[in-house]
Structure formats: structure tokens, C-alpha cells
Length: 300
Image (cartoon, rainbow, N blue to C red):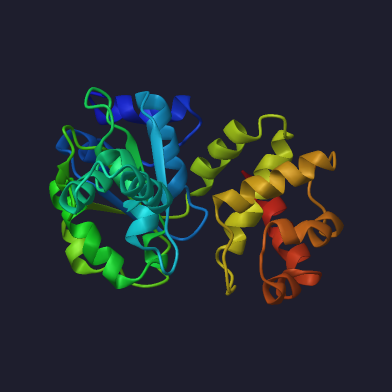
């Protein structure tokens, strides 16, 4: 376990995750205080990735619960293995070795329990509890958020047939949200909170250098400058760091050494994900932004 914020930031950088000081501080406090950490921000800003990197740097297993509309307990927490239970019932009836009461108790034994991500995380190794990633919580329904309150506050779940199962050592919990809707205040109160913003140019350039070391230096600088300028435009969906990395990998695959209006027009689909945004930026707008970027690079 890292002893200082600087140490945590260095560990993350060692795994090619360039965290801001604010994010490193929030993660450090979550680790030291044993509190869940809620990360909100635009898609592609590295919220999910930090959970993966934390698990790797801490030497802990990563357990991921991918959220979606309609997510229920059977998919998130547990369910009973009904086919196995039915076989047990049929065998008991055939042999006549069990009373109805005994059979009812036997079929709700833990050997028939299918553990889903939340229960797996709570039953993890006490000496090295896992990192539990609850990803894109904003995609779920409010009733599921309400169920999470017990997990986030007491690190336990209640199973009617078995009772309460509580973590011997709480897992490291990271929740993410792209803020397609507001997360309930009751969930936020149980978590530390950090807004993950787009990186500034210097940090994004460092990320690009780490993640795409084979790219030409001029191309890396041009791409970061162009993407930073794009984020100042009135677009439906601004590109995140994930799109920046997709773009530079695409351009490197095409053996591109520097940007040109033509190559930008041909590859905008790796950077922008909505046709209206692509149409808006193609042609003269892209050429104008590139010219501004090159002027800044020449002057800097």
C-alpha cells in the first residue's frame, strides 16, 4: 500500500497512467480511509483505466461490474443455481431420504449459490482484498443504486436464505459515471468524489508519449494541440484521451509523420464519433485549426 500521494502517483506513472495531483490524492485517500471512490467525468478520460491500473500496481485482482439499464441482483450479486437445485430435489424424492423441511434447507446451501461480482468482491482474500470496479453506474436504474447503499456503507449484502455476508476486509471500490444522469445523493455521501477532467496539453502529451512511444515527436505534438483545440469547439461529443490515443495509433499505422488537412479529413472518424461533428470539422475548419496549432508549435 503506498504511503504517500507522491508514491501512488509514481506507481501509477510506472504503469503508464499519468494521473493529475487531484486524482492521485482522491485515490490515496480512498485507499487509506477504506472509502469507495466515485469518479465522474466525460467518457474517455481514464476513469475505468485507473481501477485497472490500481489493481495491477497493488497486486490485487480486479472484479468488474459493468452496469446497464435493467441490471438486477441475479447479475450483480448472486442467484441460486435452479437446475442443480431441481436435480437435488428429484434425487431426494427418488430415494425418499429427506423430509420436506430437510430438503428446503439443503437446496439453499452455499454449494448452490452462484456468486456474481459484488458477492465475489466481498468474499475476496482478506489479506489482499480485490479492487471492485462498478463501471458506468449512471446506466443503471435507481432501485439498483438503493441496493448499493448497504454494500457501500457496510461492505455487506443480505441473502434471505443465508443471512448477511460481510467482507472480512473491505475491497477497494471504484465507481464511475459518465453523468448521463445524476447519481443519487445517498450514494455520493458514502463515497469520496472526484471529477476527472480532460488533461491539459502537457499531461496529454506525456500520456501520448507513454502510450504511443513509436509515434514521431512532431506528430504527437500536433495531435495533442489539435485535440486540445477541438475541445474548445461547439461539438456534440468532445474527444477524450481514449480518442486521442486511437487517433495517434491510426496515424502511426498509416506511417504518418505529421498532420495535413487531407490526412485529418480521412481519419476524423477515429477521433469524432458523430457524423454532424465530422462534417462540421472537415475541410476548411480542420485546416484552420491545424494552421493555428502549427503556429503555436513554431512559436513555442
